[in-house]
Image (cartoon, rainbow, N blue to C red; front, side):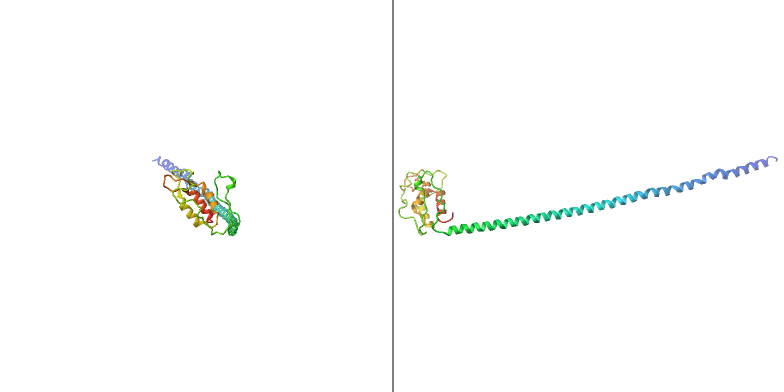
Length: 226
């Protein structure tokens, strides 16, 4: 029985000491409450930085688009200026061409003036160079043209036509010349022009011929095409 007061005092001391021992643990909630505040304050500058970066990017894009549109307008303006200058040059060239054509037609309408002659055989002597006469255009090839027989004396000494050469009978050639001689060229002159194209007959009994290139050149000239 004397020992019970001691037990009660020890139990009371232990019970009184327990609140003091558990008191430090009460500080943990206060320390844990401070962490959300620190997290919020750290994330706010990051959001602001990302917002500023997006606005800066958008501004740069708009500025680049504005510069691109300005460059395109300048380029279009340059092309329009070049087009206007080209049209002016083209119009001047057209006027010059029209003037030259009118001048050419004026020279064609003038009778009795010397006009260029087609090429002649360089082997001909200078005294036989063909000249143009100023008679009216009603001239035709007279009866003194090469014969329409098998082979005329003019072509008898001329070379044979080559295998790849195109020719026309002399009789047909002079018929065409008589129909197309609108310039009234002297027949002797025409014969000199045709001389380099004369070819003798390939076989006995065939007529002599004239090379078609020479014939076409003479026809173009005497008909006024040149």
